[in-house]
Image (tube, rainbow, N blue to C red; front, side):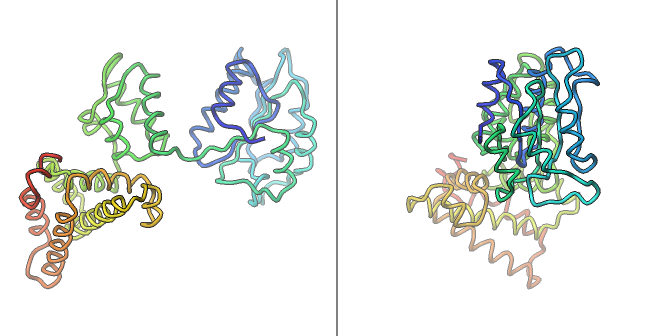
Length: 350
């Protein structure tokens, strides 16, 4: 039956261990964390070669794992069998291995009381047409792991930092998500580094994230755009020169600025018409998170100011393409003059 991550973790804390777990989804790190929690609960004395066995669906027939699950544990009350990427529950096939899915089906209908069988599937969804999937939904603890929403990701980051003995400001969390994205493996790696820098009881703030977080070129561009539209001109100029040194084209950066200003305007207009951020994101064909960021950025400007900026960026694009203006000069001039193109109230909000 379908379960939540919280359900499973609560049961494990109470010592309740299900005979079969089917863990599937796209967020591999969360799957790994739950596998570790089940392992700690099922084998509190630690793993050994006799009572913990790991199989990969692309390398070993599923019936071998079933056979091991049926075998009585050696000098232990329980054994743990892990089958990774068990594509038997999807439409994918394993051409290198001859599987017998009926053996797994029979086992799930009558699992061994002394074995915990964990089946992981790294796929967005299961093939619910298959009898095997239907049996699992009736007999196993089935948990889906999807990418965290932005507020869930914030909570996860705060929990990870607390676990490492430090704390992080709200601005630090926002900056980290903006800089690194929401890939949990990458976030955990960055948080370990930031927590080490902050030290026990220390605090990770926006400045620490800027100084230490590793960013891809795409994320650097995204942060650069954020600095521009928030009127942090000194920081924006430093980032611009770094991006140019790394062969980013000025015309591309201008295009990215124009695209962000356009999204800010669209979000602002649609918000004024009563649409929520999820509805707006669907209309714009983007993920809710960048739409939310555009909405926050748009709060620094009036609709009229955003419309004027879009018009000016269109004029700049025309002058570059007709040879009237160099692209690098145009980029520098636009950024440096931006604070003078908005009202004092907008500058104060930024």
